[in-house]
Length: 191
Image (cartoon, rainbow, N blue to C red; front, side, top):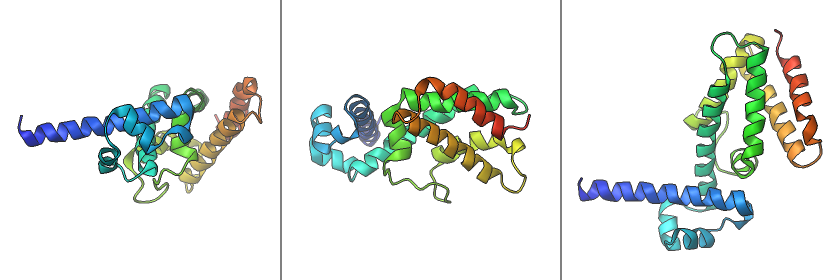
């Protein structure tokens, strides 16, 4: 291994350490606790080293969000059955999405609630975001109007996000989330 390859590997490992540490801090203490000073102390590097990887917290949030979208995509793919996307598949996707948000509150916030600097619904949208949306689109397209499958999926996703947000905020009782998901799937899936 060359010196250059070793340095690149060390840089990649340090980058991942920053992202993982930010995520751990956010999950334990909230995103307000994630500061460059605290991260630098936790990873045992100076703040200038941290800034050589990220320009600030927003870029760190973006990196954490990208990780989250990759994980969400994997979870959604695992939940979806092969073949035609019937009611059971869409229900499994809805349960998986809300379960992911419930199990990873700080990660979900980095993905959807905080300013992470990532563009949504644009040509420049990063692949992990497109892939997560694509899993939903692939399994909901048969239930959408042929001219507007993207719009249909956006409405479904917005409904899931609303349920997650309102439930997490205590505005909707958490124990009724399964009933709400059943109602949502019944309204979106024709068969």
